[in-house]
Length: 582
Image: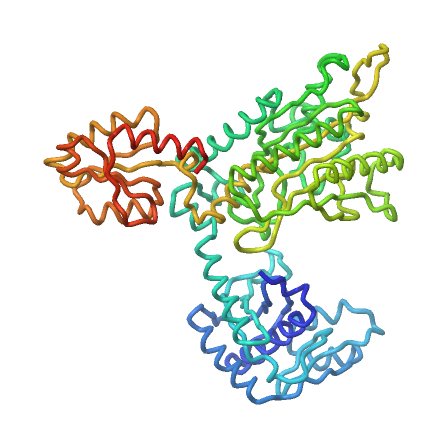
């Protein structure tokens, strides 16, 4: 999707269209008062106080009609400059504008934009006339607290989008419809994968039986790969003493993203936002020889971070999540080989999971603004050069992002481009010379000298929660057979004549596959449609022909072709599909 906010021409067009919306609302609701109407990535919105009146979704076409009427009037949009006193007098009837104006310096020149009989405060710039806003659409209406503070009055927020031509608008609206179909929140609800409830808490997902099957399959998938690479898995608590995070430096650098500390029996604890301090302590449990390294510690670990409620989104952005985390303790000489191994693990996993639209970003320190980073220029230069060399040796294209490194070292992020929406980070790999020193970690080298190891932080799936969100949207919920909660659904054509054979097939398959037997007294067509709705990969239909010949007839999801094979051939075929991650 286009980022409207970052496109200069569309930014101005959408900001002007926000004023067009406010203009139309003022015509239809004369008592309306307006807070702010900014441009956002997805278009624009305006926050409006209508008193006791309520705008509903069905009212949006009426507002659009008035917007088109104003647009066709082709009125000039004029910039007006006012002193603070003049602005206070002009907007004296609007408490929201007065609130804005009173917070400005006395000598500020305040700008407003006027189009026909409507005027509003704005920095601008705007289009020259109202006619420039021809291709727009109001998308939805919701509630929003004044100044985003729940103690304040609830305003009504109307969202919209505007483009330069009809084709771009049409394409965008089609993309929005596609986004609705792919929205992991809808898919998660329809397929009973996860749920949320405010009684439990915002941003705290609960995985239902179907969701936990997906979760468990992903966990087993990545842990099995890690075990083959020599990882050792651990289990650590989801909270820690505040002193742990003061030692690591997270308390100083990351405290605003953590939940508040809690005091118990004289100790201060906090829900952990990441796992590295715990893993540092596991390494420090005993002294290691250089012969022990690399030591690869992995964990599917529960973490908690405070996210603003407005930023929460399904299981993509939550307050409680599980990281597919690992920390590799290496000697300086092992950095390149281990970092390369991590990159290859990411690439191999992406290939098997059919993830193709992604790119690599190498996040580096900003040499002009080093205050927020670990103070060691030589370490940074050495670390950044090593990561560049690995990527260059593998031949992976990447872009460098200055100022995006973690406070303790440079990192490699894999940015995925989802089927809808903006790209985000899925996998990450970070080099760290800082934490091992903070925790005084040591190993004995071949000369008997104690030295500090280097740590590589890495997460292939990032968080399992976000990966599930991403994968549901990529596949529209049509998951590969090895991952899907229910792999096959058995439907007898007639319970009276065919149920016994269906039960035999169920008994044959249930120990090796996730299978259901649908023996409800419903029509065959209804049960088959429901099987498709639930996106079950194999729907097995058993009638008299199958009973007589001891065969299996099945349909793959999304097809209308019925294939009949022997029991042995069917089992062999499904096993092959699962083995190939199909």
